Length: 267
Image (cartoon, rainbow, N blue to C red):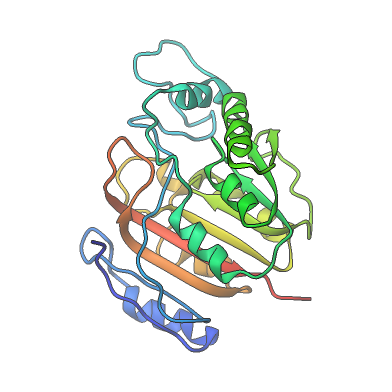
C-alpha cells in the first residue's frame, strides 16, 4: 500500500501557500507523503509509477552515463539503450504507465501527442489506443522496432522517430499532449516542451524525486515542489509527491516518485 496524505485545493492560487506549509522540511525518507492537487473531480487513488534506471546503470546523456556492468570500453547512448531493450529480463514494467492511463481518463482533448524516450512503446501504444496521433521519440533503434511491433500487435499505428530527445525539434504550439514518463534527464528541456504544447494542451510527467536511491543523475531528479514552480503559469490538474511502486529498476519497490498533470492556458 502507498502511504501519505492528500490535499484538495479549490483554487489554483492556494496551491503554493498550502504546499509550502505542508511539505516544507519533509522528505519521503522521513515522512512519506502524497500531495494531490486536484482541481477537477475527487482526490484520485494512489497508483504505481515508473522510471528509467537499469540496475546499477545510469540511463542518461553520454557525458554522465556509464557502461553496463561487465562491458569494457565506452558505449554510445544508442548502443547502451540497445543493450537495455535487447535484454530478455527487462528491468522495467512492460505495460502502460498507470498514472498516464488515469490522466487520459480525465482529458477530453485528442490530437497530436509526443511520447519522449518511448522505449518499447508501452505508453505510445496506450496513447494511440486512446485516439491520439502519436509520435514516439527514442535514441534506440532496437526500441523503435519493438515499439512498432507492439503497435501492430495492438492494432494501432504510431510514428517512431530515431532521435536524441535533447536535440529534437519539438516546435511551438505543435502538440496537444506531451508525455514524459520516467526520463528524468529531460528535466533540462522542460521550458522547450512547455513552448511545444498547444494552448489548452496538456503535459503528463512522472519521474524520480530527489530522495530516490539510484536511478538517473541526482541533478535530474525532481525536488520538492519543483514542477509546481516550473509550471506555475499553467493550470495544475494533479500533483503527487511521495512513495510509490516504481515501474523501473531491477526490483519493483516503492521509491520517491513525483507526478504532474498540467494544462497550458488557452490563448
